[in-house]
Length: 310
Image (cartoon, rainbow, N blue to C red; front, side, top):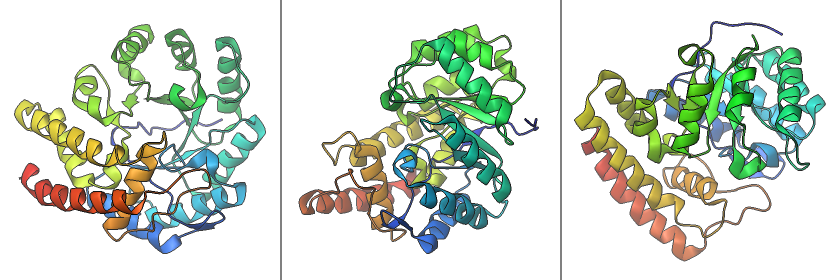
């Protein structure tokens, strides 16, 4: 266990994982995407999250991604590594690999597949935080792991010295407020949000930042939105929030499948010349008609993007 002054905040894109095949990482593409988002003004990078297909990657590829990602980031911004796993032992192993690669923190959702009580989930996270050589950011992602972290569970875990905050991807405003209300010291325990459509509303309700897929594609616009919220520029924040919702709808609705955010984000990056649109087995790519639609939508959004940040 270790403590750290690192406090997550601002825009931290859940980076896509550029692939050449199910077993091979596209390292040059990873460097291009990392530079793209850092040049866009992000406040950190999160590898192997949901948008990064983390739980779908083989263990060897995960380790390669941790090492190559750390090399690409090169200490320019904090680097967070997703270690969500069904096995505590494997999660700790990934945390150790992240530590040795020079990462800043790890991110973990509750173990999935077997149903678990809140007491069991709390025990899992306490054991993980005890064993991890890096600080742990909790990840509440019920859409994927089928378990909600209840406010009282989060509140209890917030007092562990190696648990540094929460990423709330429930998309539930009432739940977010209940979590904040349950925390012993809400200002001392940073909460980031996932759904970009709620960024302004939840930042005003106490969130310290956003881990949003769209920041892969348009990092500068997300950074500008974050800055407008922090400065109290309501007009700019509301205008950018509306544009962010439109941009998300343009790409997240291209696929009819539940993996639509991953496919839409990676497709947009492909059309920007940053990576191939290859996803892990089990995720279906866009057909030719949808790819043509995606190109038209990206051309329009790129043209609008300059205007919304002026």
